[in-house]
Amino acid sequence: MNKKLIAALALAVLYGCGTQATKEEPKAGVEERTPGAVQQPVPAPQPGGAARPIPPSRVDISPLKDPKSILSKRSIFFDYDSDAIKEEFRPLVQAHGKYLSQNRSAKMLIQGNADERGSREYNIALGQRRADGVKRMLVLMGATESQIEAVSLGEEKPRCDAKTEECYSQNRRGDMLYGGEY
Image (tube, rainbow, N blue to C red; front, top):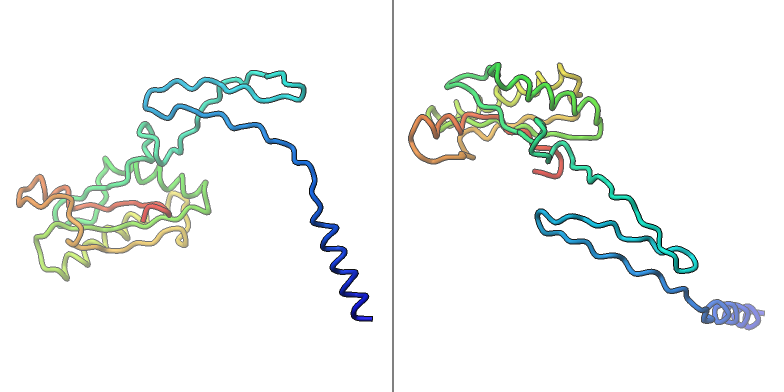
């Protein structure tokens, strides 16, 4: 009886491996990707060979990457020895808070930074207070605690290494990074 079952299975496998004519898929259009190139619509193949023009579509850019959007800005700068968010950066933090509240699956990492002045331990604590302050404001704007992680990098990730006030001011910051950016 086993031989009959094996023979039946072998026959079924062989029958399933029969060749069938395959339908050739239409080839994909090629688009120009150089900066400033104007995209021309590619006609879609139609049954019977007739082509129907496709209206040009607007390419949507993520507001997080659109340079015209406030959400593309990701750094908040602080005064010396301070963790208070300056008035000029409040609209930026509010915009990110609103974005997070409308996009519950989005995650953010806030990295608090300090300039090199002060002890290493002090700068780690100051960077954490800065990151926590940004997180509090984001939560007040509607983001959830679980969407945001606040960490301190202290003086370990400077943007500028010169020992000038201009450089120090670039290093006193909180950086907001979305999932996939860190």
